[in-house]
Image (cartoon, rainbow, N blue to C red):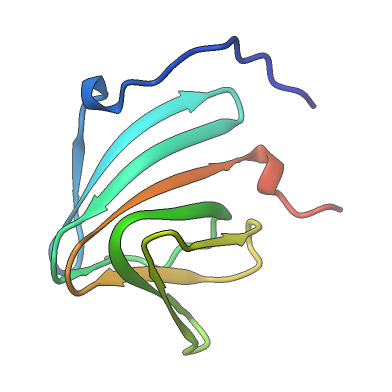
Length: 116
């Protein structure tokens, strides 16, 4: 299962932002969708708390600020600028919160589906 994505540069300043209200605060997504691959720059406002628990896998890189990734089992991980986390689909139920706001690069797609 391969992807055929030709070389291209991405000027994130030209990618439109879509707002997604959280339980508290807002998230703004800039999304590029390819077959089986999604790349996003996501910003959370100060005081943001996600409005849902997520089962999807991601590769997350913190560009600016900091946030907490909370797992449904109660574990919490604080990530700040220059840190990442990675998880496959269905292997961890998680949600994000950010006291001071954060900007993230998030990559996900078919390659994060667990092996059968």
